[in-house]
Image 1 (cartoon, rainbow, N blue to C red):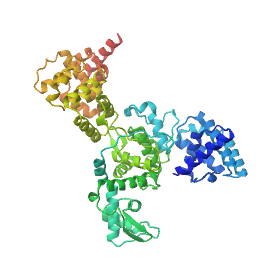
Image 2 (image 1 turned 135 degrees about the vertical axis):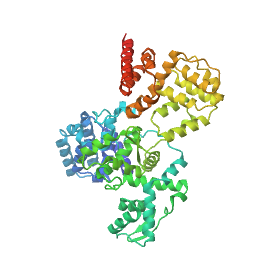
Image 3 (image 1 turned 180 degrees about the vertical axis):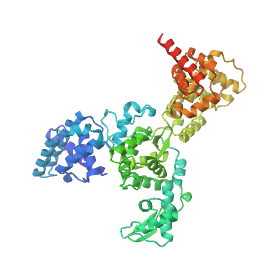
Image 4 (image 1 turned 60 degrees about the vertical axis):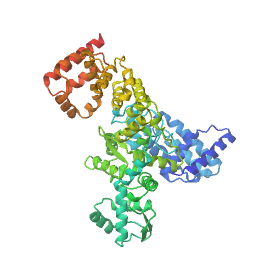
Length: 556
């Protein structure tokens, strides 16, 4: 990825355009140059050939760029401007420029169809198309089928701004890096080679016999890849058939935070940016798109359904009998890059987010860090937690947020933000407030007059021995619906577990029959959930009847 020559070329192009009165679509030309550099080995303007444009516009663009078919004329116009500039600046000869223009004329009618052909999409494009702009607000709405492209974005470095990301505390990141299995195994293999007096090939590669022996002796898989990783990250120095302990050789548990994170940063660069030929996951098709996958997860900041990745791999030619996505994801987890989340979703590990941000910064890209959530208000904390923060990071956010303010202030901020909010936001606020001690009592009691918070406030006061009014029957029904509304997402993901919980401690049949009267925005959804989930057929039928009554009341 040669960003420097592209930047110089764009500066020269701007100057040429001003001097010749040419309106230059700089962003589109930069994209052409970026992709030519990243995928076609173009290292300077003079490397462009007529075949370069054919590969770019009929192969690379359809695979990588999320743009509607009707955008093809704009891209072709930018390509023609680039050819004019190449000829005018004498970067290419006149005959070459003529061939380039002929190529652009020939492929002009083909490009719109190529952009619209979903079978040509790469993983990053397939994933972003499947997510869609509307789905970024709710990771549970991810669709497995690519939607019609709706935004002109791409996944190349520097083409679109990176979002601000929240990073885990540095000590926790370093601790996680020390535990990454692939780093530990790379160290073990390097030590095994050094102490055993073994030597690599003249090209510095692991010999086949040593790879086989290492698999048996160390219990590792992909020993050749581990060796390349150890050499790239400086764990071992390799010069032909000579090897020595590298600067980063030594037990990870004895390394400082900066050292181990530096090692992890180099490992991410090797695994994600470099060609690994199936070494990371064992699936060449997935490894070829690993940068795109990680980049899109980073940019979208929402988990992606595993089935989206599976659908893409199937389109690459891997048959069902060849595709073991579970094994591939397990390998990515082994590498510290991707982890499974609730509902069979895949997301970057906090360590991978940090490593990718380091990679982007090294490429000269602006990779902003989000502000510290502990300094934000109660509403911002709730919104951040709703965005799908990993459990461990969410817990740290809550602890740090509470530590920065007195209990009474914390309760006031959270309950103030919960007023009029959806049930799930209210549930987060009430759950955090439930951690607070008696010092928060004045702020909690102040919300007794709020009909949505009143039942929760009464419960909080009673549990701590404070004077509190009794809950009315209507309030008992309301808070039951409110708490069940929080379980809707989890119930959809694991209906059997929800049914078991309801059988053991769910509301009584009499209470369910009366729930339709509750003035709660989620009452129909809650009753529908109970109607299809409760194992007792009679109680489930009562829930369905109550749901019908609630709908009828709403319609009326």
